[in-house]
Structure formats: C-alpha cells, structure tokens
Amino acid sequence: MVVGGGPTGTLVALYLAKMDWQVSVHERRRAEPESSGYRRSYNIVLNDRGLRALEQAGVELPSEKRVILKGNVRHTLKGATFSQGFANSVSIDRYTLAQSLIQEGKHRFPQQIQYHFQQTLHQVNFKERIALFQGEFGEHQQEFDLLIGADGIFSTVRTAMEDQIQEFQVQQNRDNMRFKICQLGLAKDLPGATETWADCFHTWGGVQPITLLAPPKADGSLNGVLILPEEGEVNYEQIQTEEAVAALFAEKFPDIFPELDQKGLPSGFAQDLLAQKAAYGGITTICSRFEGSDGVVLLGDAAHSVWPSLGQGCNVALESCRIFAETLAQAQGDLTVALPSYTAMRKPDTDAIARLSEIGFGGNKRASNKLFFSKVIALMLLNKLFPMWFQKFALFQIGNAEVSYSQIWQQVHTQNRQLLIILIGLSCLFLIILIVLIVNVQ
Image 1 (cartoon, one colour):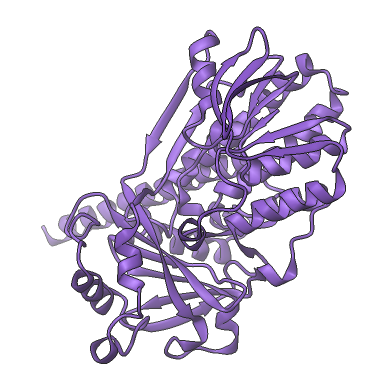
Image 2: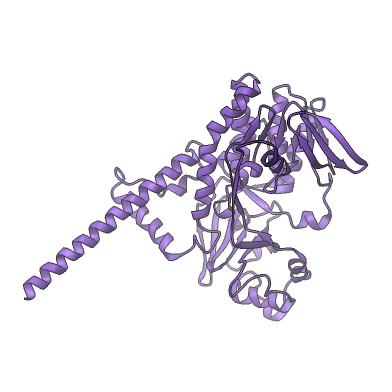
C-alpha cells in the first residue's frame, strides 16, 4: 500500500510492480484536479539523479510535455546573461510528471497496480497492519504487508509512526520565505530574447530579498515562482491590490512586462496572484529513521523534505525510490532486512542534502549574499590556479548522481577549512608586514 499519488508514490509503485508486488496507491486528491489547482501547479527541474531513477524504472517522459534545458538566463536590472547552468536537465510540470507515472503504471502493470483517488488516510494500526481511509462513499479499511508513506511534508503516516513507534523522532526546520505561482508569458517576448530562451531556466535574483524563478513549459512560456520573505519591507501581506502587484513588477522586474506603464499587466495576472494562498518556501525534515517496523517505510518529502534553494526536492525523492527498490531487491523482498538497510544506506545522504539546502544558493536571501558568492568565486579561482589542491565548488556537483550528497557535504566542510586557513595565513602575513613597517618607521 502506497499513501500518496505524487511523483514519489507513483514511481515507487512502478518499481514494486516490476518486482511482482501487488500495489495499491491511495491519493487524497481527485484523479483530475480542479482547473485553478492545475494552473497553479509548478514546474520542477530534474537533473541526473531524478532522470536516472525514472530511466531505471523504464519511464520515458512524453517529449511534448517536457523541456530539455539548454542553459540558464539570469536577469538583472542591467540586462540578461546566458550560462550553461541547468544544461541537459529536464523541466516538467509536477502534476504532469505524476500523471505520466500513473499512465505508465496503468499501461504496463494493469493487473498489479490499482489507483484510488479521493482517499484520505485517517488511521493506521501498524501492529494489526490495517489502514482506515475516508473515501467518497464513506470509510473503509484495508490490510497491508508493507505501507509506504509517500504523503508529503505533513505526512499522516509519519505522524502515526511518531504516535505508535518508540524512539521514532522527527525534526523540521521551516524556511522563512513564501511563494506564489505566476504565468510570465512566452520567453521569446522578453527583451533581448534569443531562440534558446524558450529552453532555458530563467532567474531574477538580483533584487534581494525577492527572487523570481521561471522554469520553461513545453509551449515556450515561463512558469514563474515568486518568492518573498515572510516578513520585511516586501511581503505578501503588503501586496493586497492589483496596483501593488503592478508596482512590484514595474520596480523589481521591469523586463517581464516592458509595456506595463502603457498597457498594464496581462488580463487576469494580478487577480490570479492575489487569489492564491502563499505557500511556505520549504521545510527540512529529518527523521531518526525511515522505518518503524518491518511493515512501514517513509519515502520522499515524508521522510526527508528539503528547502527549494538547490532544486533537489523531487530529485532526492525519486533517487530514494531507486535506492529503496535496489535495497529491497538485494534483500530478496525480506522486509526485516530491507527496511533497516535502507535507512542505514540512505539517511546519511538525505541528512546531508537537508543541510546543504539550508546553505544553498539562488533561491533565498541567505544564499544570495555577497559573502556567499565571494566564496564561490574564490574557490573557482583557486581551482583554476591550483587544481591539485582545490576542487571545484562542491555545490556545482549537486546534480551528479555519481557523487553522493554526503560526499558533497564533506567537500563543503573541507573547502570551508581551506578558505579559513588561507584567510588566517593572509591575516598573519598582513600583520607581519604591518609590524615590519612600524619597526622600520621607528
């Protein structure tokens, strides 16, 4: 039994079906979302970690619904610059990804995977292995051999584990940024646009503490994620009118709607933004372990959610599905062996990416400061001058599935120590020179 019909739950269902498990997926939302909910769905960017997990499950994303990125366009008040960042990653709407995985399951494993929508988990009895759901036509119970909690940051399965399983503990740390979704129009209509812009990830990060990120959609338009601090000079509590929305974009993002003064915002743009409830930017979740018995395990955000600053949320979740399936196969389906083995194998990496996301760059005020980027530039320069002693900036490897998150975390600490040693050395040298000058003057 899988609780949660998002990308994590639907992908792990495919992996289990490949291993001849009978799987039931229970999702609280409707099979077809309301139009407003779909419009406000956001695009995610899949790198090598997420793409490898899909590939090993035999999933090929529909070409007409995804974009293979050619790079990144960074917009500032001084103009736009192109870089190779995000090249070969894939931008796809989160809902589209989940629906593609469901269609894959229905097509390939019609006898092994059953999907149930509008099913809300109310209670779980882990000892008796019974789950109680509230459905469209009332309550019903279902037995399970293995319960997979893939029900997101506010997981009901995880809460039940806290209540029923001794020594199972959870820590969460909430980001102080909040976001809303906004449709920014076609990339080709932006000032200075080239042919490649429709296939690029767009960022507006030079107007701290505000950030606007826009992965491209398959139709060439940009799906913007507007991130504002929870408190401060500019926040969503202060933007309550269409005039306030227009003023914000005119001042902070003038290149998006260059004729705003003459034509105003596109029809419905401000109304749609104001109608949304601002969502939290992110929550890191760290569990003491991922399983509580030989019959329950957590996957994805339910087990290890992260802040969005590094764009790893969905990637780490899909990668966890792959690693869980590999662990289960190695244990030949023995849950008493597989579940604790999965925790031991995966937890160091998920703990690492949680901490990395909290110091990550590009998506929040903490990470976009001058000190952070000075560190990045210093390490890039040292790597070019002394490649045998200094590696490339550790976070540049975040999308490389061959490098574990725990290895990257260790590299971050190593590079911080190297920079500290250099700083101390330069300070000592400066003091020596200063003392020599003072002595000579006397």
